[in-house]
Image (cartoon, rainbow, N blue to C red):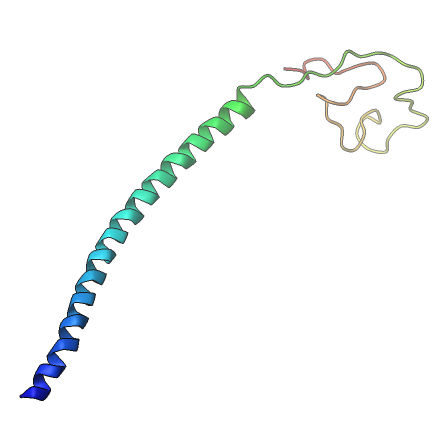
Length: 106
C-alpha cells in the first residue's frame, strides 16, 4: 500500500504538468491565428503602399532633345530593322539622330 502512495505523487505531478501544457497549447493556437491575421493585414498595407509609390507617382520625363553633332552618329546602318534603331532601342529613353519618336512619351 505504501508503494502505491509513493507512485501516486509523481503521477499527480505529471498530470498537473500535462494540464498546464494543454492550456499553453490552446493559448499558442489562439496566438498563431492572431499573428496570421496581422501578417495578412500588413501584407495588404505593403502592397497598397508599393502600388501608390510606383504607379501613382509622377515618372521622370526624358530630357529635351538637343541635336549635338558628336552624339548619335550613324556611320553605317544597323543590320536589323530600319537601320536607325539600336538592337535594344527604347523609344521612351533613346533618341534617334532626328530626335525622340512621336507618341513615345506619356
